[in-house]
Image 1 (spheres, rainbow, N blue to C red):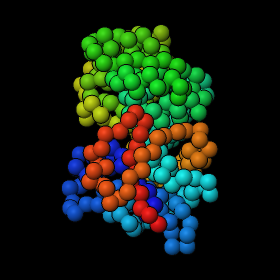
Image 2: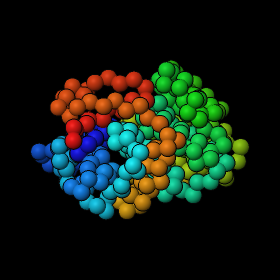
Image 3: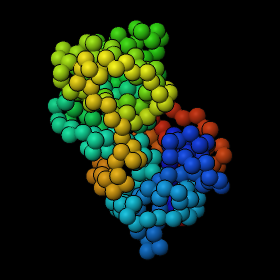
Length: 289
C-alpha cells in the first residue's frame, strides 16, 4: 500500500453503521487506496466486499476492481479524492442521463463529497449549481468551485426550506447527501414552488448525514414528477463503478477537480482517526514504500 483515504465511509464501516456492514470482527478499516503491484505498477483499487481493508502495509487486490495510475498522478491526491468524487460522478453518469445545461442542487454541499459534487457538476456542464449546507465558512468557498448560488441551512428550519425553494425550485437534479429532516422539509418546499410540476426532478440519494429515514406524504409523489433513486453499492454494479474510474482519475490528475489531502503516516492512525480537519481536507494514511 502507498496511500489510503480516511473517508466517512471508512468510519461508518468500522463502527458498523454503514448499510453494507455485517458485524464481523476482526476488521481492518479502509475501502480503497493506491498500491504498488509486485511488478512496480501503481494502481488505484476498491477493496472487495468482505476482504481485509486497505489501511495496512499490504492489501489484497482484485485486478478487476483496479485502474492504473497515470505517470504524473500523486498517490496521496488520488487516495484522498476518488472516494468522495466517485459518489456524484457515478450518480450523474450512471443513474441518470445528465446533459450539459441542466441545473443541480447539491444538498449537503459543505462536506468533501458535496464539494466534489459542485466541481463535478460544473465540469459536466451544469448551467446552475445551487449549493446548500449548514457551515457558513465552507459555503463561502463553494462559489470559487463552481456554485452559482449558495443557501444556508443553518437557523430556523422552516426559513431554510423557504430559502432553498426560492433558489432551487426549478432545478433538474438533486444530489442529496443529507436525507433526514433537511430532505423531509426540502422535497415539499421545492415541489410546491416549481414553475412546471410535470417537469422531471431526479432526486438522487447518496448520503444520510442527517438521518437514515424520512416521512414522505404520498401526495408529494402524485402532485409532481418526482423521481427518487439511490446511487451506491448495489444500485450501480461494481463493474459499472469501476468503468467510471479512469475518466475520473484523468480529471483529478489534470487538476480539473481538486481536494486538499492531509497525509499522515499509517503508524499515526489512532491520532489521525479523530483529528480535526479544515474545510476541504481529507486525511490520507501513507505507507513508506
